[in-house]
Image 1 (cartoon, one colour):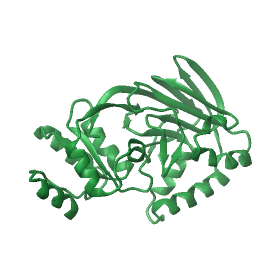
Image 2: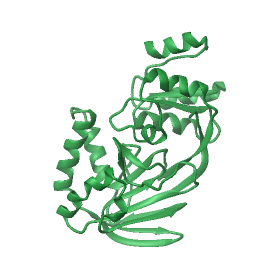
Image 3: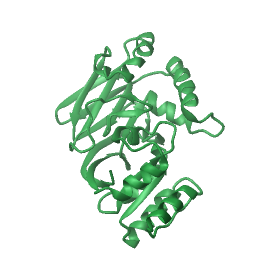
Image 4: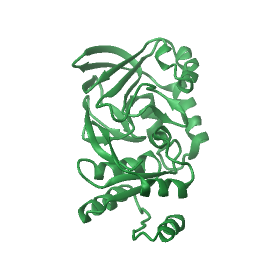
Length: 270
């Protein structure tokens, strides 16, 4: 809070700084800024906080800036947001906003990526009270999940493809990476009007585990059983209710989920 106020004071900019008090509060604050007609809202936090703010600003609201302060910071890393908070705030204040796409799955929006399968299970465990936060905590949960997770059979229907498979991972990527440099969809672009559908079929558990390093060298497409498709919309079905994640936040869903892209729905200050 002190840093943000100092940057505003140094630039002689009239602005308000708020600290969130509970889940959903960032969305409420951003919605209030939109109603006031503010030109810019800067979200300080991880992908979940950025999701809350972006969801309130999409479809005609103020531009979104960001200060990366989460465990993964997938969207901020992919977009090249400066690491230092002072630089990130100044960058957002000076930027000419541009439009990027927003994804939707079920009744939730996402700006980075959404997923069903092992990543959603990891997000659910990571967000439980008492779990160690940060990168090491995330890695610990991921390792345990990869040993224990039972893949589900999915039917995925899109205008250009139908996929039926027992998958360990189904990702809808607006941006390329989960966070911390792990890139699940190296070809994804936030402004191409498309989502990258990434489906990783379970061939064997050991093969899945040994394929993890491919997330860090842009060779995901070479994982055995991996399929990547460019889509505008898709329906994902399973025989059991699906837990999915939007920008790292777990959500309980039904046996059928519809996903789509909203091209250019969010203005971002970068």
